[in-house]
Image (cartoon, rainbow, N blue to C red; front, side, top):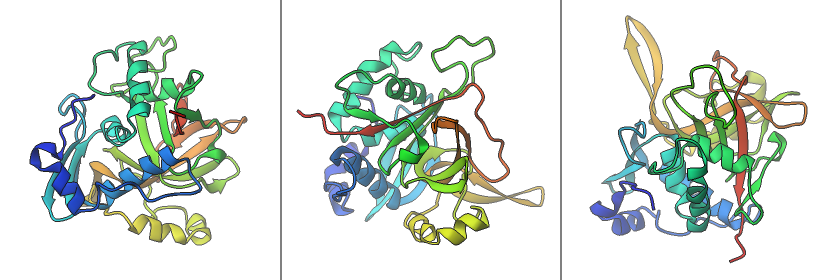
Length: 284
């Protein structure tokens, strides 16, 4: 087990029951049961947010969740701490990641799998793994776990300076939302310090075609996005867990080939590896 600082010491059983977070995830007949559990747990936590901060794993050994009022939570986490906390609700699935973790250079002994472990595991699933590989963007469904590794952390030779972070990992909330012939948005729940697309900043044509996304986005408090005034200029600062849209580009084979966090951001793809895993029944 990982060293997650949770509400246990603060009355987790009572606290989660009080806000309805201790119950099983609502059934989603269109999803494998484990994916529905993953999705239900993550959405319940995110919908109960009162406050949140992005805290890198070097400072916090996992997701720190505090009950601050009836039905309200504070969550501090980085991306992999957030996903790992939710995946722990599926012990056999999480244990498969943990067993694979030492095979990734530099990851043995860390308190939970980082983004590069998720990516390399999903890209190399062994027979009998409790996950299904999702190889195209078009096939992505809610409850999938999407991950990427940054150059220097993808398990292949790299002559440059490795990125400070190993990559990113998130829980998918939506099916792909077409942008053009070569790209689509996904709504995700993640822990990040980078501002994502919101419904309001999606391209006008996408909003016009999918007004229902406004309702879906409004289901979650966007407390991680804060407005600051610096030198007389207003800017949005992001820190912590929350919803957002990320624009993904596709390769000729339909696989994910690039990402863009928010409007005006650089599109990133060179040297980056993507992989997506869907929790499926273990048969046990």
